[in-house]
Length: 408
Ligand code: HEM
Image 1 (tube, protein in one colour):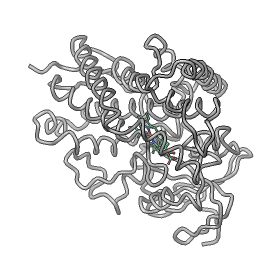
Image 2 (cartoon, rainbow, N blue to C red; image 1 turned 120 degrees about the vertical axis):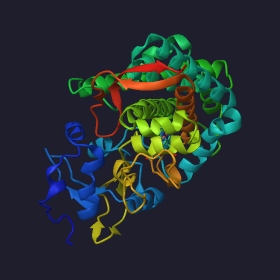
Image 3 (tube, helix red, strand yellow; image 1 turned 90 degrees about the horizontal axis):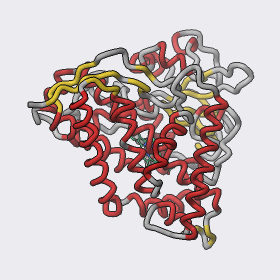
């Protein structure tokens, strides 16, 4: 098919740059026509912005994630920045760096993410999760997002980075306003200001760690050398900022998404609470089912042919996890929420050279939540309409009224 041939059916009508599209359509079902009829789809440009490619099949998404020689992240790795012409953090933040520098910095940061180093952080996650779930059970009616899910991962990252406990609420608020704006009424400007606030805040912490190093990831970055050179303040700030961005929202989204899934699939809840399925497999299925980041993006460096279409050098390519995770070619009965699903090679943490650095921690969060719910909760009851995030990137909720009934 010729490049950019106009397509007039199904997907052509949806605007994937507009967060409203994702509220108006059930994300699981909206992707089937893409996968079936237009697996390599050219999304036309709108309002003076360029068009972009949409990959929706598991196999194509995985291949693009793997290929950081022909598809670069350096000009942005989410649609919003790619469409704006680039990411100001390019080559200063892991997710938007490629090549040998990416490998070196990734290896450096991995030291702070090995299961051995994370042991005390993991203990903290489990304790915090149990405490919060116990309190929610005691209270009865709670908003699972704001009263429980919001309060866990930021403390984990806080522990990793040594953020003082008193400042953490503020960091959560700023973060909520950055990538996935919570409401259609929040302005783009607020999102930029919040990002600046976080960066300014971390700069202060870096200066302090240069003077008084500890064992946290900030101190590691502040005293490391890459290619024989120390990292600049700006780089350290941006690397740490990416941990807040990457670690907070996705973990929150998957925890709340788990609870919602249980209210809609009581049979699966019974399998978990009755001990019929293990935390490991259950956690993987919740991660697939919730797919906290709907897409990531790249820019083609050379012409690349995918199926019958040619992606030209310089064009933007988007990789839709939310579709790949429900691809009938990769998952048996993909629309079934099955806590015992094996194998379950979901793409929620990405794949290839940029595979999520915090995947281990993300899994720890998920298992801690499932364990706490299993041990303390008899039943989860939805008490009002959950409110979805307003975003074409983050897939989650800003509010979810529930009652957690205590286990006898
Ligand atoms: C990368 C998802 C938790 C830090 C990624 C990517 C995905 C992802 C899909 C790939 C991005 C790309 O290819 O452009 C998730 C999900 C999480 C989670 C679903 C939780 C359920 C975390 C946590 C942290 C973290 C807890 C850190 C504390 C990062 C970083 C990268 C990354 C630094 C960039 C890695 C690189 O470019 O080499 N994450 N993440 N993530 N994530 Fe996560």
